[in-house]
Length: 397
Ligand SMILES: [Zn+2]
Picture 1 (cartoon, protein in one colour):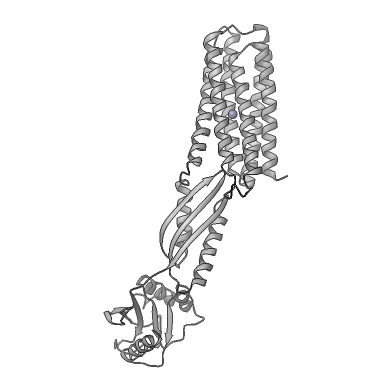
Picture 2: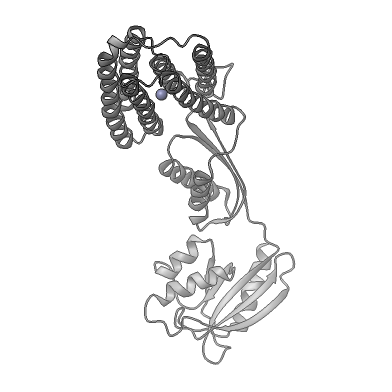
């Protein structure tokens, strides 16, 4: 048995034990508050069963339900919350109908019994929180927190019993407080279930981490659309991306990598669907490292004092922009090649015309990874090298 399934079963057994203790105490004392608490623990048993049911059958896909039965868990949760509301209503009716005094002789037993349930609840919530954090199961952590708030309502009952022993008839007020706890739980469960059933978006934190993972990839130009939803405990993500790629094959590889990172970083991601299109360019930019005379192609890359950037129309090859810029990293001590390469990427450079072979070097790797083509030429005159490049480009097309 998986550790999280085992802990879920232990949670059920603990709650069954609590139901039995509380039901016996309620019968012995006639306390409505304890009765309400017993009903509460019973509804907890039901919702824990809903969680287990979700784990067991939600992964099944059939011909009639090709997207899986994930939402069955939410549907069961919604049903459970309705049951809880109903139970709360019955107890409130009792509070206003027949509030007979508690059986005085049973008070020591009741105080002892409720104290015992408080200790059991406290110990189990600590154990479940630890297991939940170990196995990384959000539903176990949530259940542990829930059981801890259950302890608070038992504390209220303990106080009212002690008050009863010294002559204050607090039971019906304690019962109302316990019902308020029940109502709050039921409302939270119901709201969460309805949100998921209506395909509400994933929580903002998860969306933000997905956005961060995707934009961390240097090939991603823009996220055109990001949609994600829950079904049961699972997350479904849809992405529409523009990628800086020339070949479809590479786009496929990149989107597989993005899928892997999303599934590695977020829990319970069932499916990531990525639609991508290569970036459509109406112009492209050629960069050339220049020597101090601003005309000769530099024999170096990182150390070149100037860079000439020429913008060409993709359709005709006409020059639309031609500018020489000082290399901002020329005097840099360390890794200037890499810094220059990254700077060229921010300038939107598509190809680089150089005399120095960059393959196997840091800058070559940075540029190649971002799909910048590196043309190595023997020509030292920048103008001639550029027109050679433009001619070879027009022959290709
Ligand atoms: Zn509870």
